[in-house]
Amino acid sequence: MTISFRNSTRIAVEVTFLRLEPGRSAAVTLAPGDSVVVVPAPAVGYYRHLYDSVGQAHCWWLRRMMPDAELAALLADPAVSIHVLYRGGQPVGFYELDGRGARDVNLSYFGLLPQALGRGVGRVLLDAAIADARARSEAGTVRVNTCTADHPRALPNYLDAGFRPLRTVREIWDIPDRLGLTIPERLRV
Image 1: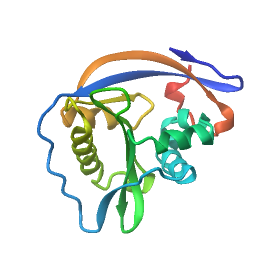
Image 2: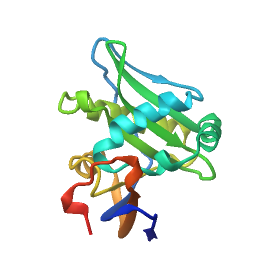
Image 3: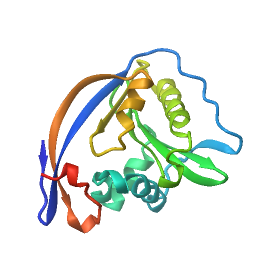
């Protein structure tokens, strides 16, 4: 797949699609003072803050291009849920579950804000995402995809959690320069 825009930087990524079969979820043990909160129909500005903070270093750009009204409609859809990890009252990570049109649930977005990286909360948040997704999934399966633009621990963490790769595809993206994303040299075409 190639996505093109004028005044853009072209990158190549390997996208791996994974699936977690039905099974028992790991117990989720949050640290004292941590909580995962479902934020029903979050304000577009708040969602963009989470998305941009997590995705800035990983070329997350699709939702940045989405018009506010379209994003608000998506966030208001009852089949889509946003879950935020708070530590000491501050958001430090989030995940988005999408159950539209499928018997399984897609873990659409998952990540930690920069200040939470390397602090041992990623796996706990992933376990919470899996438990929540399985609870919402008619079939008990969870889908996710990650790419070579994501954090280098993303794919190993999904594999460690029990996800199995279905396929990997090479995609070319033209990321609009106006978004101001830092594009790693290793991805540039």
